[in-house]
Amino acid sequence: MRKKTSFLGVRRSYIKKAAVGYLFISPFLVGFGFLFLGTLLQTFEFSRSFMSVGPDGYILTPVGWDNFRRLFFVDPDFAFELLRSVGGMIPEVVMIVIFSFFAATLINQKFTGRSFARAIMFLPIILTSGVILAIEMNDAMLLYLSDVGGQAMALDGDSMRLLNSITNILGGFYFQFGDFIIDPAFWIVMAIDSIYDIIIASGVQILVFLAGLQSIPPSLYEASTVEGATGWENFWKITFPMVSPLVLVNVVYSVIDSFTKPTNDVMGIINNMAFAQLDFGGSSAAALVYFLLVILALGLIVGLISRMVFYYD
Image (cartoon, rainbow, N blue to C red):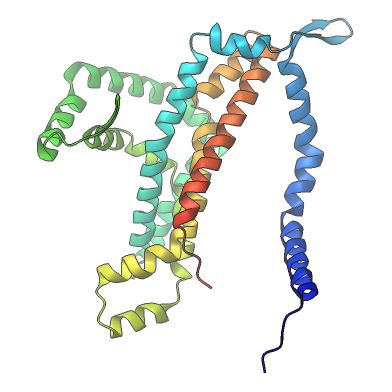
């Protein structure tokens, strides 16, 4: 005879699960409360003020929402750079996640020299560390070669010839939503031109995907192979669904990394307003707007991708 579960028992079970969840995120809540909440509130205070430096320290003069109005109705670059940052983030994140999943799938296979190949794939994490990245960004020769390469590309039209070749292969195929056009040939050329940046930004994602691939039980592949499934069917029915939660993790990581990397133009504008123009009120307002944009983008992305995530119990 099945034992009936009382309402009180269900409620206790729910409370226990909620307590475990809050205990899991408690380090974040403690860190946010002690380290970030005060700074966030102070930034909001600065964003609604004009800061001047006096002999006794800084003085805040309230200006209401003028700093925010100036960003969108006076500054000719900020709104444009915001839109360009979002527009550049989407194809960049897609290419990084696809490449990292492809690379993790390759180095997860059994072949001679697999350990060496995995070590090579770990190099992007070292190259994007603070010291190495600072050296790379301040290397005069690298900056010169980058400028020369960009000028040569603009002069001899290598990218345009490649774009025309791919367009001829695809037959001018594109997607159009009103006035907005998505040209696959353009994104392919962009991916080829930025392959170095994609590889550099894929180190952590490759490791996450590799860990997920190694956690898939081999018995699932054995059972499906016995039933007559092909390797292609195993990939789409087992491998991809099992690592789909990690796709969400890597997308979130890649979005945050794209929005906060040192070469991001919006980050450069915020830094320039604060430390070059000494406009701390405008810089704080820009930082808050950018922060809200990142939160909104993450919310939309998580909401869309989480609907397609498969969780294995």
